[in-house]
Length: 289
Image (cartoon, rainbow, N blue to C red; front, side, top):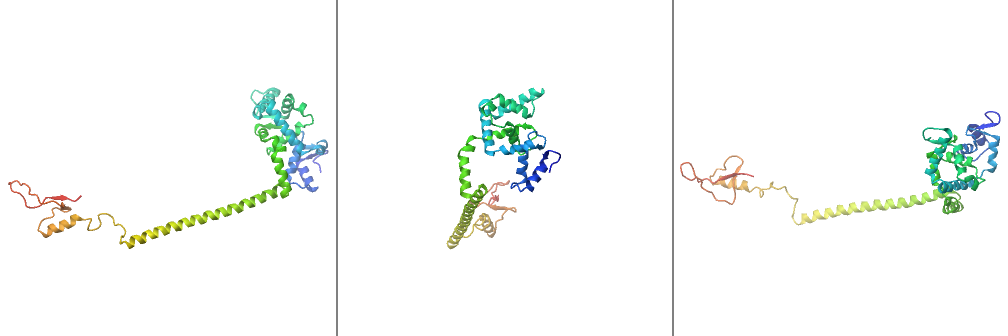
């Protein structure tokens, strides 16, 4: 079962756990391997494997909260603490520029200097370092980046012992687990959403029917009063007074003037002077506007 004498690789560890009937998926088994890989070399020894005896998830979470409290109270917060880790890393390795990642050695020295190990002597800093890296979705390689370190911002003591912990306990007791509780909540939400959608659809259809009925009644009332649809202005004979005047002028023997001209209505003919001093009997014509 070993890749070489005395050690287990990740693949061998995952396959062996599956063969033994371990009830979790390969991803969970791989995460456990990362927490046991205390040398960051992709292999675990028998001594590393024996750490499983003392491993307790609840205790690890409590130690992470204690680490977060020390970071906030003595190191100025998560962001300021990472800058201190970078400064320690640059000082240890004599780098000219600020490093983008920090090693476990710099992490351990900074936390010990802040008094974490003295306040919590039973805490395993290496397990906490591995846990933070693995929680980011990456396998531990002995270094910590700022993107992985900022996960500490989401930790709070109330999440371990306060309302969230009590809520989880209630959901597990009432529904048998978190997945079952989620399914019940999702089903209930779907029912309410479906009813709400049907009501909105029915209301929209009712509004459309009422609007169409109102327009139909208005058309019937106009028909009963003998009011037809409006014609465009200037299309009827009533809108063409100049045509009637031209017809009347033609019947009296008067000329309508040049094409496109007509006599202005409401005016009497007005004699105009000619070059010989006589006045014309023809009415003055104006172009149609």
